[in-house]
Image 1 (spheres, rainbow, N blue to C red):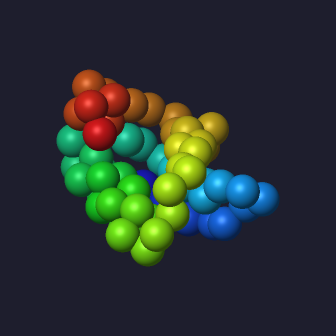
Image 2: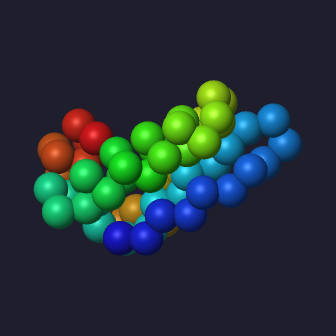
Image 3: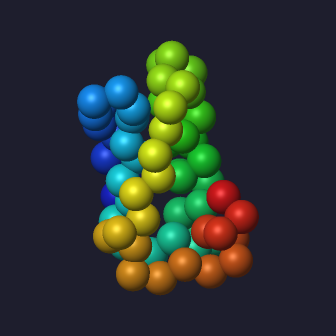
Length: 60
């Protein structure tokens, strides 16, 4: 799973690509936490590139 964090016009986009499962869910949590720690407050999670998600991914 790959994550890309990009500043957009008025918000920050966290885009995920690949399989979001129990292995990659902690990586997603980390990417979002890093964006928040960097001062970004308006976040959009783009899951358009996610081809599979299990309950762990949904929980993240």
